[in-house]
Image (cartoon, rainbow, N blue to C red; front, side, top):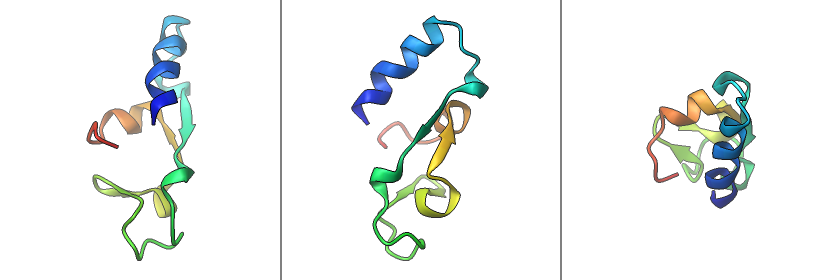
Length: 65
């Protein structure tokens, strides 16, 4: 998401620890139970494993989310 690209660097410039930066990816959800696969990012399903993720978790995911 576009705001993540701009917000995360600002938070890091303010010296926020990576483990204390969180974001929500609920926009990616459709069915909410993991059946449709719409919210799949790498090995995670936003509807089942999130929708709130830490910066550390997002760093490990494919960059095309």
